[in-house]
Image 1: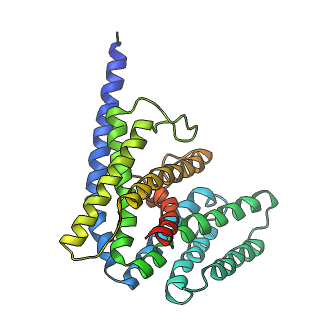
Image 2: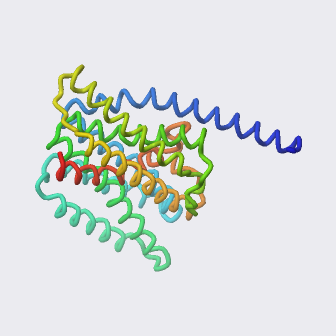
Length: 287
């Protein structure tokens, strides 16, 4: 039998979970319309990617290296944000060359700014991870939009929303068998497979609405829909676990508090960062 203290703990946990869920829903209703509106044109999409990179990179640097030098965090955030802007506006055909140059700029800046041997490698690590993990990976939205159009780009974005929502719902209601991940122990196999199933249904509904209501011409067959759903589940989970491992290292629950119920911007897009380049590859191969 459960003791009175155990009952109080369970009740407190349920109330906390209910409050967090309400906050998630409210945050989604506030943020989602603005984000979707930014998909109406190529320029606004580039602006959206740059804004998200700036916020996410700022959260990341203020978590990892702010204690060493706040100004270093600010400058690095600005440098990392230049990648999607320059890529989208002037270097569409030379993304790797641009990435290499921006990487070297950040390293040269650190060599001149950081005069402590004990922290310089941590600065290198933080800058490299932010540049590749946040700026480079999220910027795959630019070629997706440029080649396949706004409808496919928006689908790519909302795949992560769909998977996270269904995985959360299935995991909370049916989750009993845990992943066993050291860095993200609350994930369950029920949530994982439920998220994949929900994502597959979402793709079918999205395509129907886009084609019938908005007169688009999406042609995602069942094989590709299943493949995208599985890939979304796998890489969204690994993206989340990767960010969780960084947060555990720095002993923080969230990277920020911009979005109540979700944490920071980086907490909201951690899975999306892993999904986007893989979806781009799948589209190149099968669409």
